[in-house]
Amino acid sequence: METTHTPAFKFRLGIFIIIGIIIFILGIFIIGKQKNLFNPVFTLRANFYNVSGLQVGNTIRFSGINVGTVDNIVIINDSTVKVEMLIKKEVQKFIKTDCHASIGSEGIIGDKVIVVSQGNGSQQVVKSGQLIATVEPIETDAIMRSLQVTADNAALASEDIAGIVAKINKGEGTLGRLIQDKKMAENIDQTIVNMKTSTKKLDENMEAAKSNFLLKGYFKKKERKEKEAKEKAAKKAKDAENAKIKAAATAKKKAENEKK
Image (cartoon, rainbow, N blue to C red; front, side, top):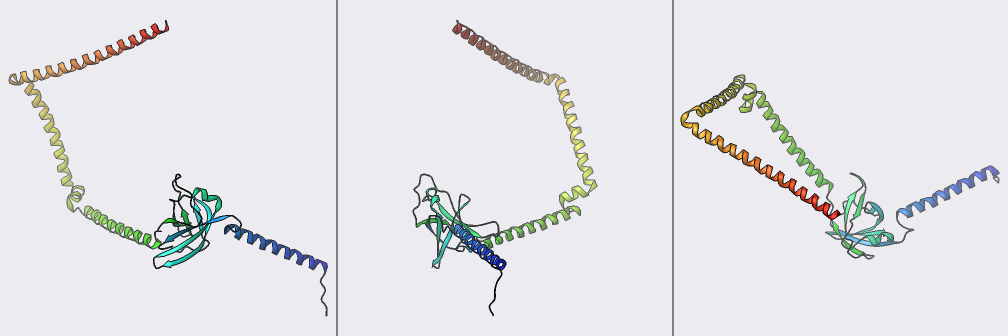
């Protein structure tokens, strides 16, 4: 029995096929754009000891801009992994021979990326297929181990501080006795009062010594020297002020003569 389709069904089928073709073409275009299939490109090579999970298709960045993709990753030997990069041709003029490649990541746990550094502007431009220098990546495991050591040290320091505070609260040690022992605090207060009293008595003794006829000449001589020093300083300041006024008057007179 022959099956017949209504015109409405055929129309809907055609629309569905057209939409599918459009989506397919857009997918090819987007993937091709990401993989630089439709842009002129050139290649660069870099050798790493460890690529830290880098994969084919990961992004290449230069000056923070996505400029290419990883085209191939090949193990050369037990200590060398060669990475081939496809980079937009328009960027080649900015990449110099002294630049280097390093492996980073998009965020803390994002995909790996290759970051090409900016070189010296006086250097030559890289050529297609050229091998550039590299900087080995820092492994995440190594960073975590370092953070763990830091956390352990902080925990030990916290325990020591807690122990010291506990001893102070119990009144142990010099600082603990100073804070907890009221008698020691009173002794320190009394010591400060005694020092103030001693200072006051010393001032009184000095005044009495000035009145003593045996030492009166010494103190008068000292006062006279202090007075002479003050007068000398005042005279010097006055001479400097007069010289300044005289210089200003001379400059003014000269300016008036030049105007005439």
